[in-house]
Image 1 (cartoon, rainbow, N blue to C red):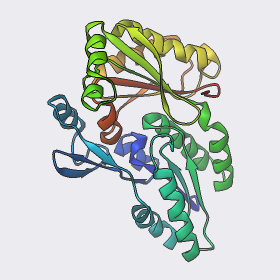
Image 2 (cartoon, rainbow, N blue to C red):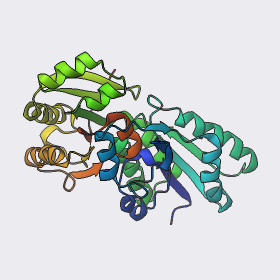
Image 3 (cartoon, one colour):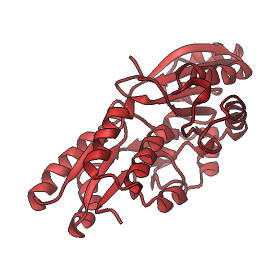
Image 4 (cartoon, rainbow, N blue to C red):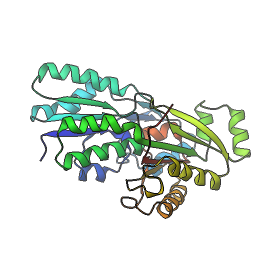
Length: 295
C-alpha cells in the first residue's frame, strides 16, 4: 500500500467503478439545473440519460467549480491519516479550480507541515484528464514515489491529446457560444466542428467538417498523425460521449481496426454533467498519448 493518495476532480469523466477499483478519490464539482443544485457525482444523483434528455428539452444547466473550503474538507482527512497527496486538477484553461486547490494546499500545510501536497494542472478535461490520472495510478501501483509520479505527469501531460467533434449545435446556440445564424447554417449544411485542446489547456476550433461520416474519419486521422508510434500505438485510448454512444462506437471500431497494438479495447465513457453542461448532447471526444500538443 502506497503512503500517498492520488486524487482528482469529478470532471475527469471516468466511471465511478473505475475510480473505486483504482483507489482514486475524487472531489465533486456541482451543477444547477432548473433551480436545483446537484453534485457532479458521475451519474449517481442524476443519471446521464436523464441529464441529456433535459438539455435536449431546453434546460440550460450552469456549473460551479470546487472552492477552497471544499478542497480543504476533501483533502484534510487524508492528511490526518498520515497520507501525502498528489492531486491532479481540471485544466486551468477551463476553470479556476487548480488555483483553488493550490490555495487549499497553502492553508493545510500550515496545519500539517510534515505532509506533502503536490498539485498538478492537468491542462486536460473529461476522459483525457482521466487518462492522465490513470497513467499516474499505473506508476503509483508499480511502486513509484510521489515525487517520481509528480515529475513524470508534469513531463507528459501535454502528450495526452484531446480531439472533439459535435454533431448538434443547438446547445451551443442556446448558450450563446455561437450565433443563431451560425447554428442555423451549420445545421443546414450538416457542419460538425472538429476541435482540440491546445498547450494552454484551452479548447480550440480547428476545422469545420461537413457530415458525420467524414468527421468520424477525420478524428481518427488525427490519431494516426499524432499517436505515439503512429499505427503501432500501444497505449490506452479513451473516448467520451454526450448521449451519442453510437457515434462514439463508430470511432472506437475504426481505431481498434487501425491500431492493432492498443493496450486493451477502446474504453467509452460518458461526458459528465459539468463538462456536458457546456457541450450539450452530440459530442464525441477522443483521447490518446502522442506528440506534444501545440498552440
